[in-house]
Image (cartoon, rainbow, N blue to C red):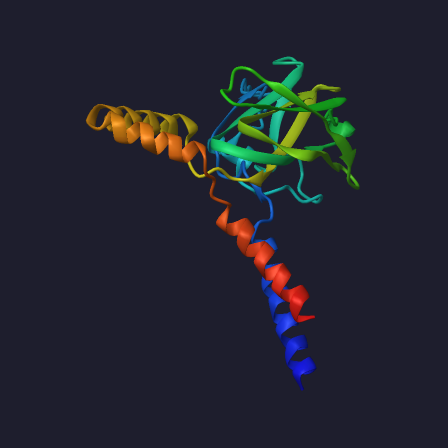
Length: 241
């Protein structure tokens, strides 16, 4: 009977551990975020239609174009080689985040001059000005829709992410730009400003107490509550077994 109860307890604890780990899964950090883009064709004429970015939200709305959706559907945004030989999309993540994967969805329909890019490279940045290459995407997919994706061995810190796609034909159509990882809790600049303000106030009001607090903080550390919880659950499960 004791063994049976211990087994049930172990199963329950493992289930809780799985739920905890699942809750920490990567999410699409670009979804719903604002962005800027280079290369979108906007010079519509009677003989040359454009394929606009509907409301400036299409590329990060979280909706990918299915294979059966044609190029003139609003889910696709048309970039033109004559506007820029390299299409670029820059997304503001609004907070310092951990990014572990990048991807874009593109269309390939040579009958109307739409071709997949010859090269796709992903970048990340802390300030939106100085960029670091995360690497180049690998193409996969079936039919006329391709995904260029890059998975990183270890997550990188980023406030901004960028994709650069080299046009191989007259047109490059993109449906979605995604970056997966763990979202930050708030704006880095704002957090630093609040921290500096609090530090100045504390220093001005009670310099001796502030110094003591700093010394105490430097000699002690508090483990992550979430990490400790996960470890505790796993240890209990092993002990129960």
